[in-house]
Amino acid sequence: MEIQYHPAAEMWLAEFASDEELIDVFGEIMALITALERYGRSLEGEETSPIVSSRFDMHELRRTPPSETLPYADSPPVIRVLYAFCQRQTADPVAVILLGGDKADLGEDWYLSNVPVSERRLEEFVRRNNELKPLGRRST
Image 1 (tube, rainbow, N blue to C red):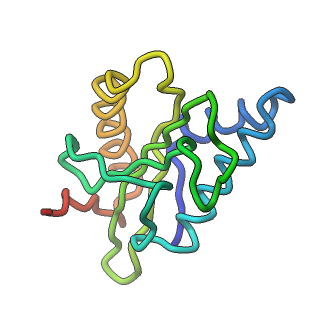
Image 2: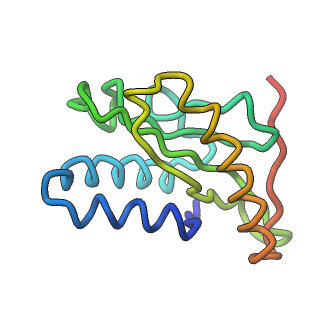
């Protein structure tokens, strides 16, 4: 699956890549993104989960708890990377990485502010990339 990045998400990832203390966490985040690239919409399990509060087909990549991709990710930071699926008229779906952060201090409240920010970023991203259309939330 093709992966694209909102500019703010790219900057967030660049901060991890440039911090020597967080370089291992950066590698784990990139391993999750690589799993998304490899498995696309069929990625499931501890690595990802749907964001049911979003009106879009939005999901999160999860650094903790440990998973098949990240068996040693069992301590802070508790990273979540929000992404959404978009469709092109003539090609396969695209995953857009929208936002990432550590939810350790806020717990579930982390989503209250970050899901709306991610939705706005997705709307902005598709306005600038008009060949993409965000997919709506899938029914369960």
